[in-house]
Image 1 (cartoon, rainbow, N blue to C red):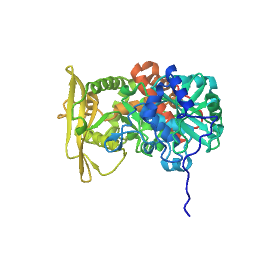
Image 2 (cartoon, one colour):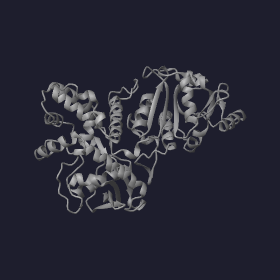
Image 3 (cartoon, rainbow, N blue to C red):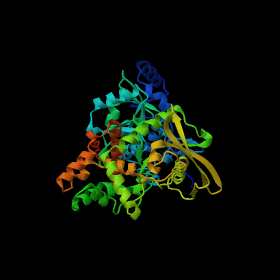
Image 4 (cartoon, rainbow, N blue to C red):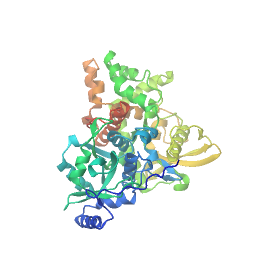
Length: 502
């Protein structure tokens, strides 16, 4: 016998006030006049209904990420790059979220992986007065949004734990506007801020932790990034374990005497996917979306990455790594970072990665880039700016031309020649990537080195005080990523997550 199902719920009022009611409209107008509805306009433009009963966390996050205009870097549907719940699968399998929901810590982890700045607070880590200040801050601007994790019972609503963004604040009545993503159930509604605090100050029985809120904003450092950690493939779990657990143990158990000894230990038997764990950040576009040229804005971003790459190459670690890899690559003892030494093969490989990004699929098979590759040097004001790597991607019966923009010196580093048609490798491919990866390791990684002089040398090589400001920013970004992935790997993201020390 078929059941009739449910059509919405009556919003318990009080304590809530329906946004569309006369009183709700009055609060809305007064809050606009007070300047505490600035975040509302972007949020309401991307307001969505959760597509599954347990997808409230994913729906809230995708709504906020789109409101902040953060580019996911991969395709949603058709040619469009867009955040959707189905794309937020980094920290927890979607099938598990669909069946069980998602925890506060894992939503914060997802936001980090998606490229946002996140400040997460449980109620036992802050106060209701500070919460009010954060609500005012986000409601008075459109570059920061607040997502609340709360228990519905405080509002006399059916259900248990829930996530939704806060759309605004009314100072006179001390009320917040909840943009409830379960729109099939309840409409947007105003609730007393103190009551929302009580609803957040409850324990999630699954994790044993209190609920809370998170501030999500657009990262300020995007254009400066040259590297990022990839968690799009399940192999990241073994890589994170190796870097965070195995490497410190190896350094402590072995009696190493010099930097080459350290590199020999680290690269003796690493996970096979280590070379793909850290990747270059590049501009990706289809040829029909913009041809082979690059805009002034793209040239500026490439120039910043050029400078960052130069800073990596100027580090002491880089020089050690180049010499070490040059002497060992012929023996096939180390993983390949960055691809082959032939520039056209590099172009094909990188553009294949670009095709995966645009298709929204990582590590796909059946991708062939061998039909044609093109490497074109772009200049601005008479100076080298970058290279456009083009390739024809063949998948089954379909062909598509893809362009990726990379710094000029990155290609010279791979090939040792500024002329793409005269390419002969003089340095091991990926020396810069391995340097960035080693700088990313937490300072305590190296504490187990027994030789005091070697310990001092390593600490000098990795010291943030010895790195330029731009490179410091890149290293700290990678460390934050590695730290959060470690917590995901240990299934500990629901514990307090202090920021890693520089």
